[in-house]
Image 1 (cartoon, one colour):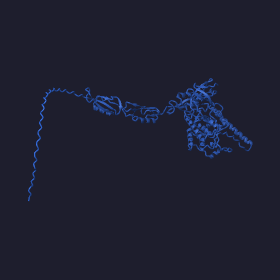
Image 2 (spheres, one colour):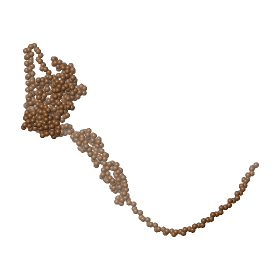
Image 3 (cartoon, helix red, strand yellow):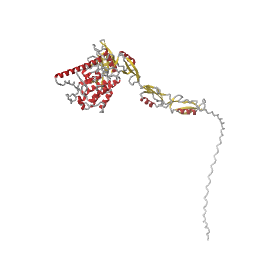
Image 4 (cartoon, helix red, strand yellow):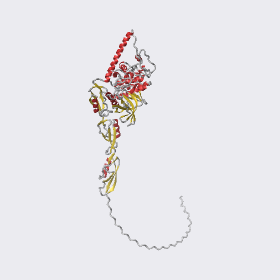
Length: 610
């Protein structure tokens, strides 16, 4: 085979990151986007097998429909002609870190609390995939990565029937239904599986994280499968005394033989783990400490020291009986029964795995396909389209398949039907009554119902500023959730009325009613009746804020011109009077001589009465 170092016209391939039963994974560089990717290619010797090509494509379809932080993302798929053979490939998110298998092989002990946290993240990914109708079918440490930041990434969705763990698979054929140490009992029996099969496999993984070994080990995959079907696992605390009883309870409930006795969903198991980590009671029955003694073989003491890596337990020797002949007979009988059972299980599983029923085929995934694409895929798999329903969805785009029955991977009779539900888009929501509200209040109401809200002013509205005057779509109309709704609100500007030609008093009243303040000024003119508005500013029809002053010019009658008064005649100038002659100054009169002073007479005394 020619080693191709460049795929799809954009991916440079680098070193090998890992091998699987049917695929090889290399690090790559996406030339177009300049990012590091992981590129998985189908093995060249399997690329000519239509069965493996179909299963490889099914992986791409299943994984591409999943978008979750704990699931390795699929970016692209394609096919490349190599040595004349069309080899499919899948371009995935490149995740730095190591698989849980690598961590466990180093013999590192994982604390019970950390084991529960890792398992909870795996269950998060499974819950998401189960809601999408996809059962992983191959949960194991090799398919779970831990990033340097401690994040969990689940890999290889949708290919459990085609991926092999090179060291432990159910058959040596190319058709593989999972890794023996993590098979659910129903997988081991070749029965149809559902999401609860992933719960069992997750329980096996949790068991190994807690104890350092899977719940069942054996010399061959078939012997391990037998134990999954028939044997009860020992509580993890018997292998590591530091495992708390709640961890025992959660693990053993997940490992119940009957699916009905396990956790019924990944979410239910995750919730129990959350309760355990929070120190609360769990729903799984807690095994009493004394009860764990019955799981110990009589001749096997419990190691008081916790261990991180365990070797398979030694084979038990047959008990001595009355004599060697009887013991030999018993041994032969038991050996014969065991061989028959193992051969029967292997034959049944191999037949179901390789061929299925002669009248059944595997249901392809139709998720995120259009109805036309779904019909074409079904026809290619000898199936027909059954009932088609529509249902609103918040996550699946309109016109694409959001669910199907039977689920992807389930067996269905040849020429049987598959029912699908197609997304009708976002669920419809009624536009509430918002006209008359303030725009901010209306916006808050619409956003609370999930609408995208925009707004614009209506300059023609006479409503108060900010009042919603209309909405698009209209009130009461039903539209998809998240639709854009436009609020139309008043700008608060009002139109200036036309008062030219009106009487002053009428014009002022009209302006006041419209919300303006009139300011009259007068202008003398003979072209209009006195008291009539002949001009206004702002002019009619313009929009102004309420309370704006509008100047109106009032016509005033012109005053009549007065008649001119006659000019008075000039008075004759008077003749100048002759200057008077100066009068002679009078001579001063002589001063009179003083008169002689008379001698005063004595005052007579009046007579006295007797």
